Image (cartoon, rainbow, N blue to C red):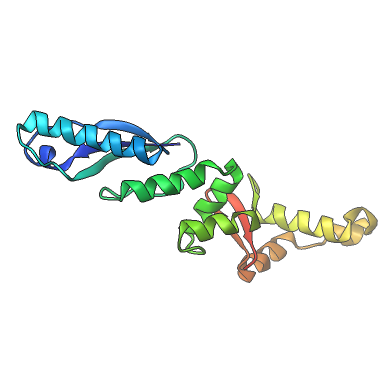
Length: 178
């Protein structure tokens, strides 16, 4: 789900470039072992001992990028977060990203808990959402064409946006009632 390139900080500071791509999530044992491998390799190349610090030089999300990964992130906490994210459906990942990026949720656990409350209108614009809302609420087939053709969907869309529950984000419309 998330690949990170792990680098030995002391070896890097001494001019040795090296490290290892790892794919998260891992078990705690696998993660500890991988960190030890990277630090041991740094000790070998530098011909010094007691390498203890690592940092993330690069990262790649395989699917939806949900989080920004910081260079000195705690790898165990990051691994736990990725584990939680790996259990979600693709639409939930998009919802989590939306909730975090828009500042609606301040942490990943809250965003995951709220992800099912987000409705994503993929590939639509606000006027489309307004039309669908009116169609679902009033069944336009039962309204005379003279009236139905004069409904101001653009105005309704604008009012829905002002209401604050609809936001355009990343090419889609996200609906969230808080």
